[in-house]
Amino acid sequence: MQALEGLRVIDMSTVLAAPGAARYLADFGADVIKVEAPVGDGVRNLGWRDPRDGETLMGKVVNRNKRAIVLDLKTEAGVAAMRGLVATADVLIENHRPGTLERLGLDPTDLLADHPGLVVLRLTGFGQDGPYAPRPGFATLAEAMSGFAAINGEPDGAPLLPPIALTDEIAALVGAFAVLVAVRHRDQTGEGQIVDVSLLESMLQCMGALPSAWANLGVLQPRLRSGIPYTVPRGTYRCADDLWVAVSTSTESVAQRVLALLGLAGDPRFATFADRIEHRAELDALVEEWIAARPSAEVLAAFEAVEAAIAPVYTMADLAADPHVQARDALVEVDGVTMQGVVAKLSRTPGRVVHAGRPLGADTEEVLAELEKRPPRSTPRGGLE
Image (tube, rainbow, N blue to C red; front, side, top):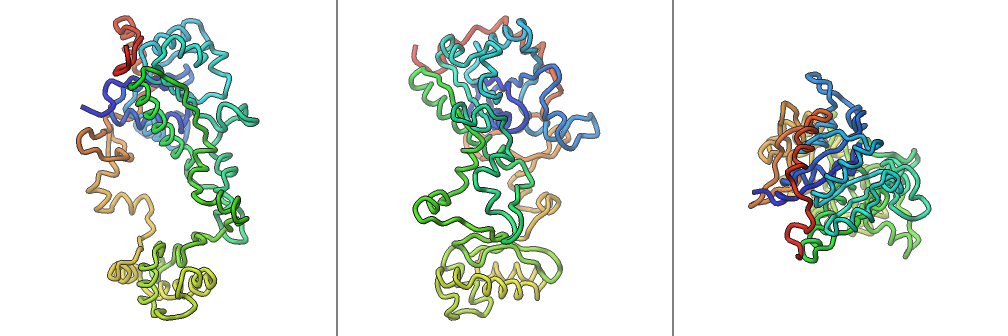
């Protein structure tokens, strides 16, 4: 038995963040029904396609383990069918602009009045209230406004956005976590609720102490390439064979072992954290010079011998070939598509990847037929009578 077996989730969201939250629930056994408009979710046209069937790889990843149905919510029949699905569900996940569900006749407040144990995840760019709530939500906006882009890049260069959908992936985890918190409360009290998650605030959580540093000290973190203000040396360095490695010295003991390895033990310029920060450029240049003079295998072996933190900078090809990644099943193949494995390993109720994202509407007939046999869930499973 999987941990979320028996949990029924209706996923009417689109593209990445909210569908990603539903995917995490599906990985651990929730029955997730993906509801799409007749034209399909935009993720079906996003990025690389599987040459076997023309479906996008992103769609096969983010909608894995879900059943796929089509409903036209611009019609009375479509809205009625959606209400029927919600009546059987524990969780509803959506990411439309605030007010859209209300206009469709699916106001979450009304749904909760009819189904008090329902948990509704609303995942948007800026949340359900505040001046920016009506704005369209995109990860790029959150990466720019959270302070993330401002600290990425060359010191005198442009602020850089991440080359992946970073905010969407983080918000997906936040959404799944928040849903389970709400389900836990529901199972104890019988009370469902609306869960409001925003892309901006999800990304802001990754900023650590940066808001505190500004508010309390007036400090703004500068762009430092791959460096961070409080760890020196830390960054990526090119070896003699043109391969790159990443080095971190975030603890004093590791920093001292690296200094000894580089022949810098006892150098007063680098004796303490404060000294190393003051002489950042000098120390970074010395590390760069030492590593550049040696092939990557020698560099990696030397650092590992003194138990210092170092790793090769991998491409996806390197990652896929790594024996540890293979031993951990960090990547799995399902329906002929390689994708990430389940994000966490549970000893008693492990998650699993059963199938890739399904074709548009593949399960419509089956799911709608179930509604005739499945009674509404008037009282949540495990909730109070």
